[in-house]
Length: 433
Image (cartoon, rainbow, N blue to C red; front, top):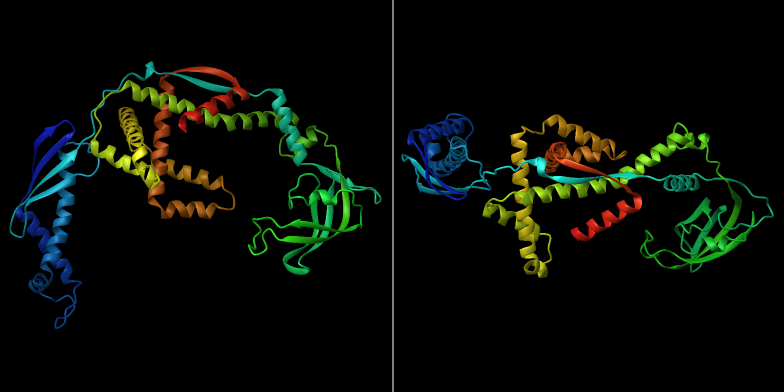
């Protein structure tokens, strides 16, 4: 195979490739022998069909298949031999081909730009550390206590009031008729939360143990049986028991009941959990700031076909009537994404960063463990979707590069309150929208 560069202008390169006819003939002969063991034709025993007969009947198709394989193989080798980093799919133009002839073709392609990396040490970033105050911790503990509330039986002659738990049976009817799913036994409702059917709770207030009452409400609009949704319904209720809330004592025993070692440990866990909730969003801000500065610090030509491909992908998510309106905006976004991707790849290459199969496997296992009850579904998703695995690999790769950059740049640590963190995140959301 002979390969030479015929033209090179900017990021556009053309290669001339000539494959000797003897190489193609060898592949044709090998293919015919392979087919001889597979083809069954009337009048011939299996595996005994002469190659000439196979060639007479299937010659064009066989040559086309061999040609396609030779083009893929030699195109890949030609690009590797010339050490070209291509952007997008190359365009192949056949000049001479056919049985008994040399294969002569050209490859038109765009290559990735050679990036002169700027020193990472010049990047200055603010990294946020969230300070969780005692009032926030106290309020979170009170919320937990509210959800872990205990109840004790009320006296028989004492009426139900807001905050009480009412345990009751019911039989529901529409137009005097029973319906499927219209019965309930020992239903528990905490009055005032309005979690059953809107307006239901309030009609239980004032009842006592063993009282009966017909409660009239409309079934919700999202009721599973759509034919019954929003229908006026009568619930024939009987109160079995009324319980009053007990004050929850917040101490070490309470902390142990919710999974902590003691009260101090529970406070530490709440601080950590609350900090992590906001830290994820603040890390996105830090990452965006890093990428913005990296993009601003570098200037180079972008491969037009990559820009076109990325723009089309972004426009796919637009409504038909918005295509013209957002085309220029999406094109700029495409350029930004491609430019940042090229820079990050260059940084990764320079520092020999890679993602191996073990890292991908560990990340998938982490996701599996984070979704109890849906482990098989998550595992099946990745096993059946190679594109999902590639996407995951890309995300891990990017995060590894970002971590490297963080280790080299100047990070200005800044302590912020929850209120400040919420304001910073809100401002980022405005920018992104």
